[in-house]
Amino acid sequence: MAFRKMFLNDLLLYEKLGGYCFGSFGRFYATKVDLRKLRPMILKRIEKRARLYPVRSMVPVANEVLLARNILVHGVSTLLNSLPLMACKFCPEIYIGEQGHLIPTCWGYKHRAKNRVHEWVKGGLNDILVPVETFHLNNMFQSVIRHSQRFDFDRIPAVVELCWQAGADPHDENLNSSSWNLEATNGNVDGTESLSPNDLALIAKNTLEAWETLRSGMEKLLLVYPVKVCKYCSEVHVGPSGHEARLCGVFKYESWKGGHFWTKANVDNLVPPKIVWRRRPHDPPVLVNEGRDFYGRVPAVLDLCTKAGAIAPAKYNIMMKVQGLSGPVNYKILQGH
Image (cartoon, rainbow, N blue to C red; front, side, top):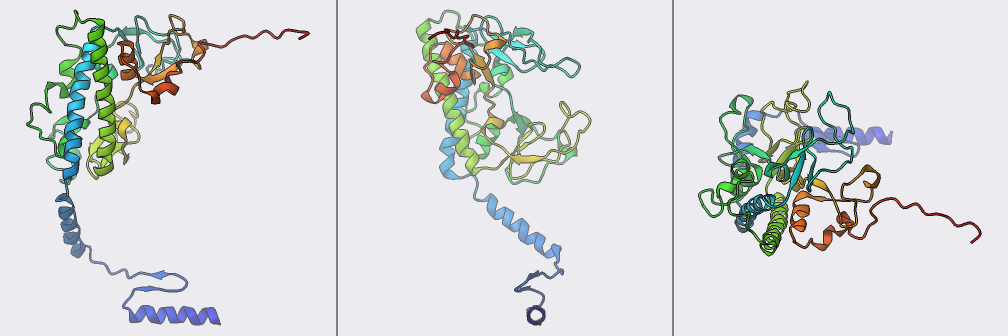
């Protein structure tokens, strides 16, 4: 009886308030909502939010990221003229050295068997600094790009697009040199054949610092500006919501070719670290599969710069395994002791 009485009281209160009530045993909501009246309110709220961007305090960070990116691209291009880089013919694996390793981790094309030994060819800049492109928007809160509009917008590096949206001047020559296009500077740096070891070490030091500045600056920008990434094909979109171009699965999920599934992006989605095997002085000349659990695994930029003479930050010591063993050790157990 008590339960029935409380329930009737909630119904009476619901009628008195015109359809809205938070009762003791549940919530009641009115179903009469005119979406046409809500649409102007939503659009006005979006317009007010757009006035808050770009955030003034983040403009120096965006400028710093673009400068670091220019130094990074030029530095890696210079180092690659003096240090060899090998890339697998059938998968994205790379190795910095005269010849590739013998660790069978090649997954290749679909018709090839998995876990094969890599087939090495000469690599280039794009193998270390993986290009990540996105649509260039007029402003961050413009209308969503439809599938039929996918050819109406330019494709530029995602880092550059984020910095421009964050307030960096796209017409500043110091911030936007030709190095924003990786294909234009893919290993084409003149006058690097006669560099001394000290010069290479200085370039490597500056390049590694630019790499750290780039990634730390991107972390700061991603805390303020919304960036989306597709969980299936790694497509990136700078903005509060992803585009509607049905391009997902063109390369990997070939039977799908549908819309993207957008999630929040992180630094690795915009600046892939490209992890590589690292050979230490006490490792064999060619890395073999038996010691793969003992070798270091580090970002390719770090491995390239340290081999050119730069000193790696202490935070990478665990990944580098500097003092680790080079392979399994067979211990003989002495009987009678």
